[in-house]
Length: 349
Image (cartoon, rainbow, N blue to C red):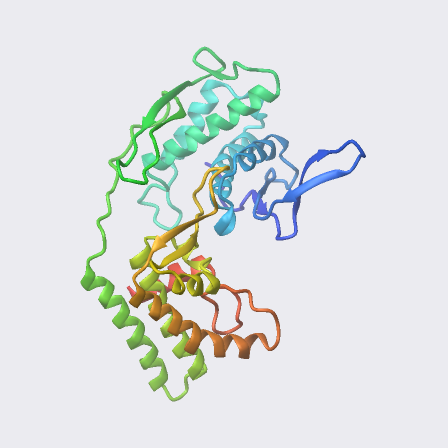
């Protein structure tokens, strides 16, 4: 079965620069390339084919926020195939259709190690992984001169299909555009898509109440090790997070990137618009969007900045430059990570 013990990629650091080209003077030109997955084989050696494919997706401008974003998702998907190729001692360019069918079969039959009675993934996840791996193998074939590696009559018999993604029909909706994807007979039938309804107001109010009650319960404990001012800030920050998620409709990663400057700028507008970073964007699309926000909600954010954030951030940073993000860790002053938002909402729930 497929070995999932070790992650086969690591993310580049904040100072990493990707090479672009060499100019006429022989100087190498680079660009910032933080959070790009660098893929390796199970023995730690460099996987040229996978990294070339990830570089292609990077040049398309896919998201790299939140531990690698879409690029990390693509890397984790093709790593399933790399583990299979390593185990059967076959290079990706030499894979056969029978081997690809065997690979998909293992994805389907693999059991969850924590719950052996359950499958490790549903059919929709298998389809996503299979299609991503076919896209990767097609790229491998193109770069190695074997254009029929993945094709209807190729060594791996897959078909490139297309459908039109419809527009939402709203005032600011994007026009419909064709979406291409690979299909293979070994891929299972999709499972029904689970639709989620909006969260009812009483549940949002219950989250707010839980944020207040948890803080007050901590303050009432005599031997509580968390300083009082940190507990109070955590309460205020959680209320701000709930407000932002409710009023803006932004993703958790986008909430974490909102700045103090954007809140103060919105206060000066006749019709307040909060600038929010956009994580899911095309290569040529603006990195920000402006979302209308009620003035009374903006007042809540401004009060948080003035009475909760400002005194604590001064205490924690002690003369260091302020990173400028609205939300931060009350223990060390670092910008809040999006997985912290997820964990806190789960705790409140």
